View: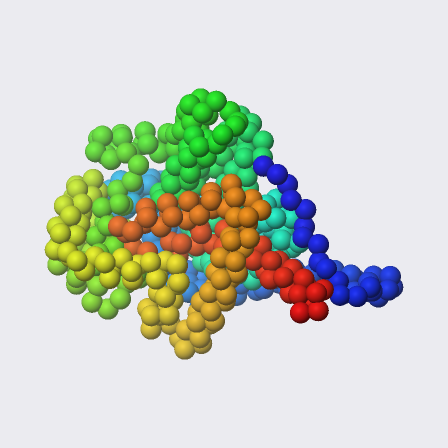
Length: 448
C-alpha cells in the first residue's frame, strides 16, 4: 500500500518568514491546547463517574449483570447465576471486573473506569495513527482532535460496560490490519488473530472481525499464501477462545458452544428493536416467551431455578423468533428502517430517553448532532480516500456493510454501533475535515 504525504495548502500570498513562524506557533500551541482539553474532558468523566454503579448521565444498562457475574467469580461460585452455568455474557469483561474486585475491593468500579480512561486515550491515538497512515500527518492531527471529543468515545469510558474495551480492540484490529496490508507478515497475522479472539471474548458479536480478516487475506492480490494465511487467521482466534468453548461443552453437556444469547437477542430485535427497555416491553416479552429476558436469568435469586438451562431457553427463543418473523410479514420493512436509523443515526438517543433528566436529554441531543456532523465529514473523507487509497476505502465500506447486515436480525442502537463503527467514523472524519480545509485554501489561493 502506498504511503501518502499530507496535502499541501496553497497560499494566496507570500507570508514573511517571521509571520509564518508566528502562525505556525499559534497553530501548534492551539493543537496542543485542544489535545489537553480533550484529555481533561475525559479525566472529568472518570472523576464524576466515580465508584457508583450508575453514572449521572447514564442509565446503567447491563452493569448490574456484569458486576453480579464478577462477584460470583470472586466468591467461588463460578461463571454462574444462582449456581446455574451461563453463557449469556462473554467472559472477559466480568473477569476484568472480578480482578478489580480482588485488587481494589470497594473501589473496583472506579478502578475499571480509570482503566477505561486509558483505553479511551489509546483509542484516540490509534485512530490518529490510522488516519495518518492512510492520508498523511495533517489527517492524523485532525482525527486525534475529533476522537478526543467524539461523544460516544467520551461518554462510554465512564460506563461499567463492555463498549470501551471492545472499541479499544477494534482500533487495535484496524491498526494491525492496515499494517498487514502494507506489509504482509505472519507475525502481524498472529497479532490480528489474537485481537479477534480477545474481542470475541469481550462481546460475542466481535467474532465478525474474523470474517473481515479472512476476506482481506482471500481477496488480497499479493501477500502471504491465501489458504495458509486463512488457516492461521482462523486457528489463532480459536486457540484464544478455546478455554471458553471447552468450558461450555462441559457445563452445558454439549448443548452450547460459544453463546446462549443469539436467540434471545433475535426475539428482542423484533419486540424491542431499540435495544432499550421501555414501559410495556416486559409484558410483551413475557407474552412471547413466557418469561422476561434477561433479567430472570441474570439473578442469584432462587427464582432462577424455575427456568430451564440456558441452551433450552435458547432453543425456545429461536422457535419464538421464527414465529414472530413470520407474523411480522411486510412490517419487517419499516422495522428494519427503524433499526437502521437507531444504528446509523442514533435516533434511539432522541426518541427513547424519557427516563433521563432534562439536562441529560439535552446533552444527548447535542451528542447526536455532533455525531451527525462527524458522520457527514466521514462521508466526505471516504469519497476523498476512495480516490487516493481505494483499497482501504473499499475495505472500510465493505466492513460497514457487513457489520450492518449482520446485526439486522437483532436489536440495533448506538451502543451496538459504537465499538464497530465509531473509530472508523473518527478516522474518516479527520480525512474529511482535512479535505474541506484544503479545498477552502485552494479556493483562496485562486482568489475564489
